[in-house]
Length: 379
Ligand SMILES: Cc1ncc(COP(=O)(O)O)c(C=O)c1O
Image (cartoon, rainbow, N blue to C red; front, side, top):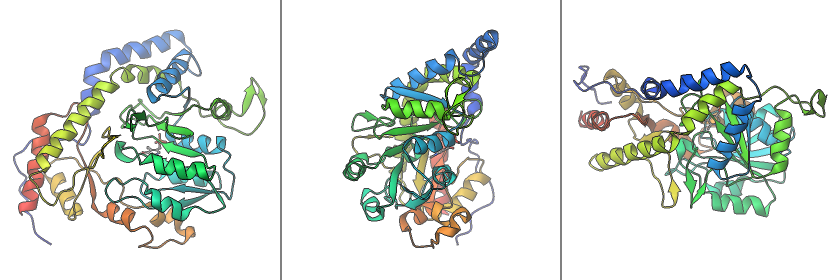
């Protein structure tokens, strides 16, 4: 391996994400919203949550939103609302955050993986066709890093087999595919408002969005102990309610989301422009008709681990999302997979690196990140 100089370059540190900069800009609005909830002394299932559900559903271009405690709960409850039972198979990509798979396992269903495309990191529709069996009960599609998956062939395949499609839209709120918003493409979609997401709460929160009144009603019941009316439970549920303080904070942030999206897209364009000069780095792809919202700006480079170390020595943030594909996680050892089963996911896990991207990022910081990567490649 090439050895690199240990002396840090004089360029300024760049964080991977700077939520303090966001709070500095909108802190006043947030405090007013939180104060409003505290003045009302109404903390669970109130006006803020109901208003947020409507606003998010509108943003996604669907009829219903159901606020929940996390994106993971959104996946679990969406799967239940789609009728997934213990022993059923659910198709999903192996290159995603573990929650996509553990939601399937939480129901006693079996995750069946379909490899990704090496250029978009999203599920390969052709692979999906190969993995479907008579026991398949649902498909989960992930819009990884903020880029929509290629939905048309996936939806066509699912329709032909009458399989419900669940979008894991945790990373892609506000993105669109051929003019349609992610979250409106499948039967039901799941959102995460984890603090680092493009629309992040000040704690855990999530939502299910759907055009189906039946799915929305079922998730509403399940999130509140299976109660169809107060103190009358028709099935086992649990507590997965989105609280009013988080909803009020999210409503403030939602007003800024389209500006923040534009800022992320403009930063990505600047990175793309600078990376044209740098062979050896593959910038993220956004095919024609796929609107990327850059939850992450993820490059691909063979010497990934060495670059990750080089950047961290120079105080430039970077993160590997995700170093272990799901089929090789100890969690799934009982499924009997081995290295080589999903080669595109495995190679991506070794070569991807997400660079600093957040709305307040400055052009000079982008230049500094790219210059440092150029310096690494010259060593
Ligand atoms: C792709 C994906 N799916 C699911 C989740 C789970 O969301 P949460 O952390 O809100 O439970 C996340 C985020 O953490 C995610 O990135």
